[in-house]
Image (cartoon, rainbow, N blue to C red):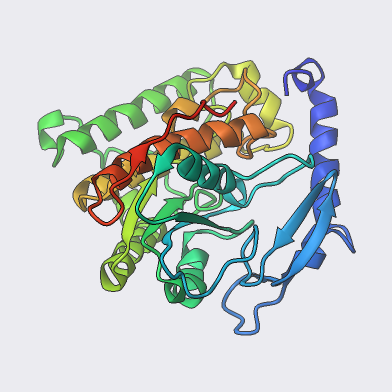
Length: 346
């Protein structure tokens, strides 16, 4: 990515080539994906399929998840499912590349000694949003009896579900009028981004509290929380990260705009989406993983593009998830995990 920054036009051409390689006839997408026989999902992954993508092998296992084969009956395993979109599925380019759920699986088993073995299943699916993944959760994941489900969404959910209306006076000016401290902070941040974008003479949709919390996104999270309660698994919500944010330098945003032309609107939607996730976690006493330390690292080699990770990014993401999960597993009376002496993954 650092090399690409010296030639933005070449980056845009490379990104178009990268996308074309995925979707071309006989390419990885056509081999690993097929129409959903129930016609409820955009497609489903083909069990026991395998395809080359650049120098990497994309393998879909016996149960239709990316990665090695797993047993339907979890036996004595503590089963963690990473539910997400293409940044979770992992757009691998090189033979040694591993998506962050696979790296997380290695970290948990290498660094922790537990009463039960830990298994992380990669349930990321490109192009899916949370609503799609609710169907996949009911159909494919609940039968596997997960102990923990991590929700990492945002790249696909932010494409228009908040509605078209711009920022309005419906948001209270007086901080005392806001219903909670967290909401006041959300409003303050949204207004700050609005002012910054206005100074650049750009008209960007800014979303009100009602638009965000009455959106299809919010309803999907409420359904996810209900499913977790009804099926007795622990839900972890995570914010998502982009290579740039609303406060990134204009030249950085313009660089990614060559491949993502609606970059400014996407960044505002992304911020609103992450604020939604934070409030949903806080209001429902759900553990939140905040990936903000990865957000906006446009000048580091953590991203292939605006949303997809390099291997360094996958490693960092796995470290963030590990730090939260390790505390849970240490305190879990069934697991009673303790630290092994293990070097930090590089």
